[in-house]
Image 1: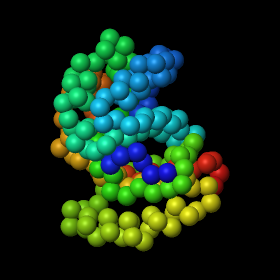
Image 2 (image 1 turned 60 degrees about the vertical axis):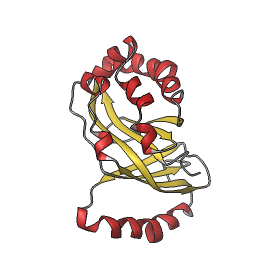
Image 3 (image 1 turned 90 degrees about the vertical axis):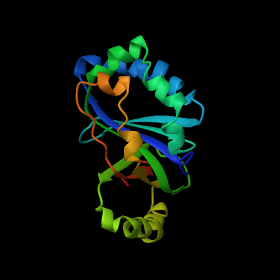
Image 4 (image 1 turned 45 degrees about the horizontal axis):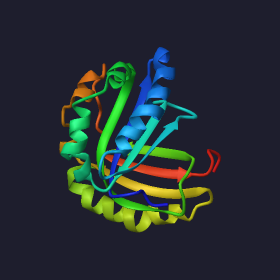
Length: 189
């Protein structure tokens, strides 16, 4: 299934071990409903690593990157709830990008997500986007067990906006610029 919209928030992070239970409750009961309640947000998902780090990947899908840089979302980021202020400082190894979805295709929603973060030099970007969109990504959608394939490019100006939530994190936040997401039906395929 294609992503729901042309904007995405991609967040990878670990947690302090003592914060895990509180994080799960907060994310399920407050954070996801709050985010998806913002006009233009369509869907939110959380994945847990079966190998490697960081342990968590959170994906929010929105109408556009402009929604993700808009006042409704920024106002929410700058007025964190008490629960958010308690949980967010436990995040570690945070990478977060506000993205424009430049390719999305698929037949369903996967229970597993392979994420690949990388960068491409300024000079080569247009050609790499063209090659990925026309030659490399479409055949992946036909692969056994693949439900969706997506290419997201960070809008660095929106991604680097300082908000109260970002300042509450103990670590600095990395901004991956190129992201490929492959949704699948199992971790074995």
